[in-house]
Image (cartoon, rainbow, N blue to C red; front, side, top):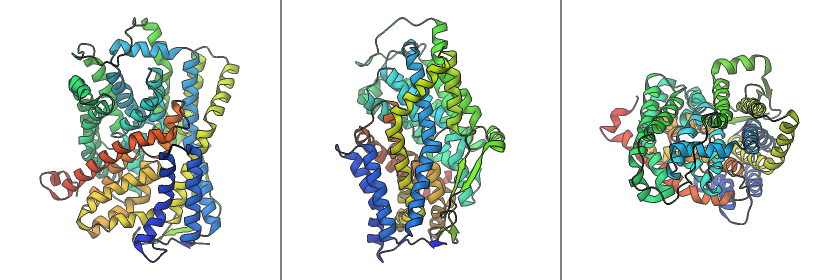
Length: 539
């Protein structure tokens, strides 16, 4: 049985768009309130999505329920699998007493909390985004910041704000590889275009991060160090994305930024230290520092190797299973103008249990735990405690992904996309915000590119704008939606042990997400029409 998606089920673009937006409004409204826990908000959201899909769009109930179940399964694997194992490693390091040493080792570079925030959330977080993506950078950064003494709200919010500029090149370029696949555009052209679109924001984010934490005085005090972090990240990411491709752009920028800032802080100190300064303590012995960083070094190495295409291919060769989702695979058909031609939506669950990023993290946690002296029994007990600790968060992530998949297979995302497309000359601005909305809904720049990439290219051709510019804008705008997507917020609250306060995190970061998304959209608008910015566009 096949079912043709309907993008105007109510015979009115306005009413149909309002109906399609209702699950998102319910979800975010419940999260933003102070009364509804995240897992309950997610359950309300998926219930609303199913009511709209079945009752308004007239999607067959079996297809709607199957799409929700498919999304829930995807929330557990691979996303929940990543979160579970990162928290497992974090608990092991806590039990071994390594976090205190880690905190003191960073104090050897700087006792200034503002600079620690840039080092961990921006520089180190960008590395994990480039190597793994899919929740890993937020989980690791938030956990490290908690270990350094940041309150849960700050650790969560600033990890989310920092995880922006490298997102389009995350997981070794996965979002752009997917974008090239659905649009037919040249991958290297897309990589170059996104690199140019995000270059100003690589320069902005370290300053924005410190401003959000410490105000303008913090920016004035730290601007030399912030400039070093920004330039040493942005320039490599820009060059690699334009000269090589998307695979190593974020990793190159993050590594050079971390090393450059660490070296700079060996001889530079702010003239006016922050009032919020970590206690000055004796620097641990070199051996203690090495042992404290060893678990995270193991994690970095294994995650990076696990993400290499050659490694993934080798592991998938004898372990991956591709399961066609019964009833759903190929049953929901996308139609023009969302796509060029009628296209059945595939529904194939990849059970790549060995090559999954979470499996690499699990192996790293086991190796690190054994090196820290934990017995197999201790490892098992800690793992069971971790499962109990993140159970509600895993439920929340599953429900969030169920909303995204129901939205996709019912065509609600297409209805919302078409609403953005009917904006005439302002389409570059609103098309960029469509990417932002796509990530906010799905929790993934990759998913947003898959959902809206084709729509962006079709609409760009109709409005005589570069398709490469607008396809890339979908990804560049999407990175600013990463900080408000429910999946990332739940990952942050889980990593900081602050479950139940997801609404507080959302309220804190929403204004930053919207403001940065608008700035990206204005930048894309300039690139579309105004010289000399238009000279940067890949035609």
